[in-house]
Length: 290
Length: 265
Image 1 (cartoon, rainbow over the protein chains, first blue to last red):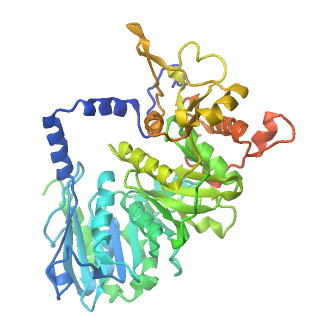
Image 2 (image 1 turned 90 degrees about the vertical axis):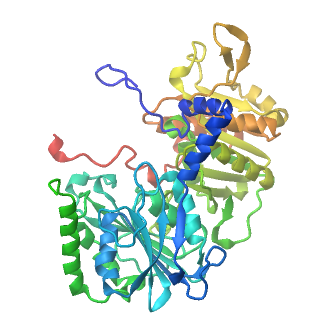
Image 3 (image 1 turned 180 degrees about the vertical axis):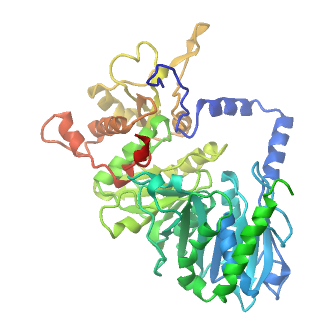
């Protein structure tokens, strides 16, 4: 492509398969057994492992063959969403850690511990002690494109999906939002929602307008729910702050009035304190002098 | 795999024409398919659920009312128009790395099991890779697998269409061996050659183009298709009249991003 000033730029093609991949495919055909072994090892390294603890189902310690009943699955993706659920829902002390996801990719490696800091990379599951069919997932790691489907199959594959309702909280940069005005003039952070066909409850904010789309793990979960007719809603917060930020976290507050969350919130006054502490801890961790 | 909408019994596509895009340069095939679905208001009949495509969701790209604007769409969906015996697969995202071969296999397996009469793949190829001959005349090309040659070959002659030229496998060294080369065509070549080997009646319709504003290319390709299938018959033979009858979907708004900040000026 030639620019206005006459220089020629190599523009990346929007086609999914470019000629470099075709060349790579040709090489693949000439692969030696050693190359094949290296590729297989890499694939194995990128496998997603979901580990459930025996606390999830007291009657049996083995979940590989059995599905556990799940009536509500609430999921937070990204550090601001995770901090929101930590401050406003998990703070009640009525939750118990029951599982984790172990994965590795170029961007992150998840930790195995359940006592985590906001800066850690983790994907943990909690169950509500008073109602073990309510499951919460705190996903503070990046699940790569080639791992998203595996994550879905391994997590949802363990659930008996009858009467299941899914709520997903996620954030993304406000610059991703398409609007006829400039994104600079938008009052961010703001919340937008997308829901599957089966989701009949009221939604706590305006729906995401065309031509905006959602990508990554939130899109993978919502697609799964749409295809398999599971009522699900995604609340996406558009924010201009990349790091952990109290204003962005509080933008999720309208979601507390939703059917799936309202009974899980105990003491909102305590939440403000917890949120302050969480953001402060994160700032300390980010301090280059410590 | 194909999953019908709403848990209803799967519609039969036996004898239908399957239209689908290749994710290719300028996304021309996908834009052309958008025009088809939007113009004929085709209802969604199912999803092509696969781990081979990058996930994405959004609200109904073909929304016409407040009510239907809240229907969720995913990255690969199937639409149908039984009155014209058409079934259309729209693909909205690129392939997950190293998964495009698997996608081709899954797709062709579905094509075989659904017993479509023919498959038409809408695609594009890099304009800058044309040779001296290809720089002249029409930028539109077609390809037919042996299985469809008998039924469609004559029509292509009568329409005066140009078949996609083969190029020398080793230019300059050995001009005898000629191969098909569709640079920027995504999985077009793979799907076409697999269809040839498997006796699938497939036609490829493609346009030479470059990345940029590819809306005119989409119109051009969809009109090319219309010359064959006669989906829209215009009273006059004026090409412009047919052009005006294609309906642009709502999702084509803001194709080049949000508005500019006034402070820039």
